[in-house]
Image (cartoon, rainbow, N blue to C red; front, side, top):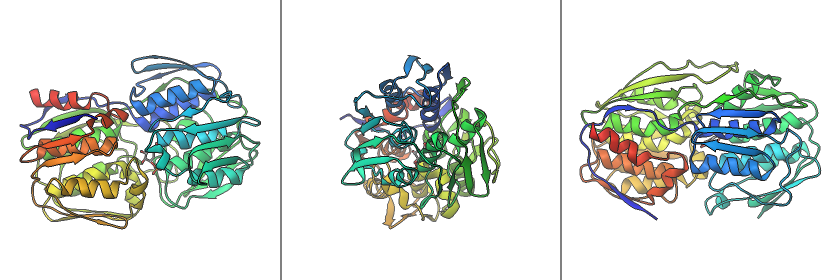
Length: 434
Ligand code: S3P
């Protein structure tokens, strides 16, 4: 495990292109594997989680060539995935585990066993097993709900499934299973969550439409996949953006950031807190499945912040950035509240507990609640030691906290950042040198 110290920083300056989008990279590799003609993905994220996806599609029969962030996949076809008894190792990647289970549930007569690291073995699969079983799949999970688990592919039937909680992973799992199912498959979301799967499938000509909060996908015989370009991940960009907002005198240009409205809630929260982040965003587009992913350059400057409330429909639009909202809250004037975010307990760590313990250890006035946290802003942060608990976003949270703190922060388990942001430390260091 690596321990890295982040000292209080002078102004951060310069331009930066953070890594490509993790969610879109997973989806691009999976749909490429469903095709039979070669597909080239440019801007593929070469991080631990998305390399697990390339290994997983190799295990089920795809040929994969990677040169940096350029990946060529020759897929196995929509209905011809076969692991020949080999276990699919998903590493730390919950998204991979849940989306791939959906596709493989429709491989008639073939079984697939999934396993992963210690963190993945704590992450529930019952949320995808319930709808997949309803469609006709057979799934055996450890203790009925955990990895390792085996999906026994069957002929699937289309269903109408009402998601009990907003989850893009579960939604995407059911939609991918729906491609193979007889008839139409509809997923109803309580509130909008990231729609990368819908955008990608609809761009590939799959019959897919949205009516209010219901998304329907039709049966598909085969998938023709065009080459795919992946934009910068706003969830990764959020760390240098937060650093630019918090470190006195900073001015950054964060380039080519994906600003799909179902992902860019963090920018709205920054606006409400009074942060200076300038750049065009996609407007909310209810009832529509846009094709493609919009990008923007974001101009970021340090400035004072005020507290805010994040709740309700907004939560899924920045679910992975909520740890950063807690950090910003510690620097803001007044109180910052996050509620309705119980889902945080099911991420790479229990992010209500790890964020609250982590930031409190650095001097923040923060309390956990059942479904979020409450932070009393004190205008700054002392510093200290923060454990990543093997969670990439916790590691990067500690690093940003260190740059903005009075005494610096030592992050224990900094290597976790590799899961989504290879070169994170180097990017921060480069911004400090300008
Ligand atoms: C993801 C969806 C979110 C998010 C995760 C990636 C995806 O999870 O937290 O990092 O790519 O679909 P849920 O949809 O389960 O909330």
